Amino acid sequence: MTHLPRQYHITTFGCQMNKADSERMAGILEEMGFQWAEDPEQADLVLYNTCTIRDNAEQKVYSYLGRQVKRKHEKPDLTLIVAGCVAQQEGELLLRRVPELDLVMGPQHANRLRDLLEQVFDGNQIVATEPVHIFEDITKPRRDSTVTAWVNVIYGCNERCTYCVVPNVRGVEQSRTPEAIRAEIEELGRQGFKEITLLGQNIDAYGRDLPGVTAAGRHQHTLTDLLYFVHDVPGIERIRFATSHPRYFTERLIRACAELPKVCEHFHIPFQSGDNAVLKAMARGYTHEKYRRIIDTIRRYMPDASISADAIVGFPGETEEQFQNTLSLVDDIGFDQLNTAAYSPRPGTPAALWDNQLAEDEKSDRLQRLNHLVSIRAAERSQRYLGRLEEVLVEDQNPKDPTQVMGRTRGNRLTFFTGDIAELKGQVVPVRITTVRAFSLTGENVANPLVCA
Ligand code: SAH
Ligand code: SF4
Ligand code: F3S
Image (cartoon, rainbow, N blue to C red):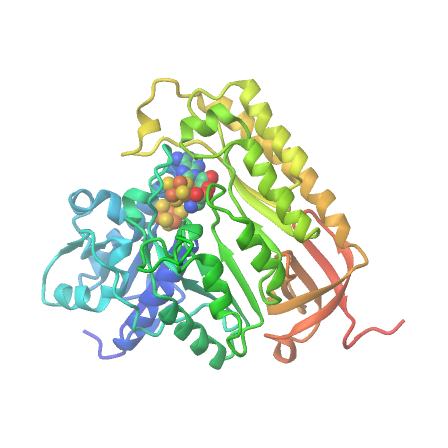
């Protein structure tokens, strides 16, 4: 047995919620005296924070776990944890399948990691997947960045999209209070963070579960109210939020974004399909016409706003013609970025049981055709940046070229330019864009031109 500090490693799969949860769990482990190990093979505690949104995401976990299980046979004091959405979905079954595991814990239990681990160190094998009220987070997350930070505002999802596991694995909506959110952002401002992203699976639902209605009968704490409430936090220069649901997106929210200078002109609003019958089968609760109206309204207030979304191809029963409607929507809107996926039947979701499933090669053919269109349209959208002056918040060095730094425009385009990271990290720099690619840009710092012609 060694007396050196025990080392931990976390591998995170999936979405921003999981990334935020991992940062909090890392904070808890460090408070317990663990030290970060870059290499999972060196760690005494390995935690996989998992995703089950599609089958391939889930399968990845099992292949990673296989290696650690082998290690555990040689190193019995290795602590093995599966957290996140696969843990929630599989629960006890996961222990039966992988008996070497010490702890299986759902996403609602992330803040309880210390308690759970103490039980493990007492010699127990633990499954923590029962629904709980998420306690206000009093831990100090170990954040990956010193410039940008995630701030959870609502956990869970009350929608019932027929393809989606998230409500099963993340539970019902639970909003944090505006005061707790503001306190966290104030602390981030004091620590020197410059940008925050407010997070929720369905962030437009923020506040519906909090008490209080206005005289007009609307909920007192909406996302729009929250934006006004946190906008003046000192030190924070940019505010983003994700993910928006078209069903609840309001003009009031759009107006607030246009009015509040720190809120960036970038909207992530998944549409999933451009066909009304498919949208109905998905139980999304809007039509493609309504989606188009939302984008029109955004562009009326903020003509240059960047728009990103998610889409699924090959949903059960989707015909070629219905797929064409998705292509038309993508062609008409011109997204700056689109996350695309082939439909994957998920356990415990209604659509997985339908008998009108499409063949895998049909789905992947549609996915390729959609991706091709997306990259053409994104490259066209990028053209508008050429020659323009953009504010870039510098986050890091370009890992592929140490003479360059990288950051994002307000519209969320990744941008590279020549500069010294030690000097520029966390600064908003005016950059003249000289080269555009579909999903990234290159430019020159015009505040402090390094190369004078
Ligand atoms: N709350 C967000 C998205 C959550 S999941 C929303 O409502 O849009 C992220 C994305 O994964 C979804 O937008 C969807 O495009 C995709 N996705 C979810 N379930 C899927 C499935 N069964 N097969 C393929 N893609 C899926
Ligand atoms: Fe899933 Fe729909 Fe909830 Fe998004 S809104 S997380 S797609 S159920
Ligand atoms: Fe995956 Fe869970 Fe997020 S299933 S996408 S990690 S909510």
